[in-house]
Length: 226
Image (cartoon, rainbow, N blue to C red):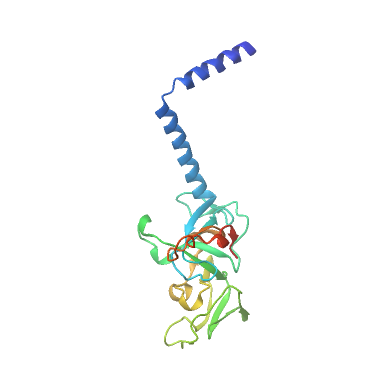
């Protein structure tokens, strides 16, 4: 039996050694691409912060990783989640497909990142910039206010919103930079099917406006997102 095994191993090596270099490289490249797509679809995905709506939690130029399996894996062409480790929780920093991009082509859809404030069934209210959930004041140490003005409800929903109930399977989100964030106050709720994952770590940070070597924010690299 061992002789036969040795014979087949020898033949296999001969076949492999006869492969031209471009075939070996192309096979390795295909495998790498397939693995990358699997990881990006089901495990982790990289995102870059383009705006200041989450200052100072996330700065423009921060690059972060998003955990795509913690809320459950979505199979292609399906909105159902499988093998979820936990449900989204109040305070999570989530990445989601912008609700108003529904119906646009794949290449036109944008990803937003905000902090989860209201869970399904919660009653949320905003009074003079203060957020109340189920009648209790909700504050996060990360939230900041850069505008000393308090705008009346007649001007817009930024600083005042009458009590409303978060619908089933949907979430209400806000940016940490409360006075300068385009978030749920202006466009509504995020459906559970649009949530892509939990932002959990900054793996790179680049300040495009700074001069070298200050462009790289070394103090932010590898820091968790809270």
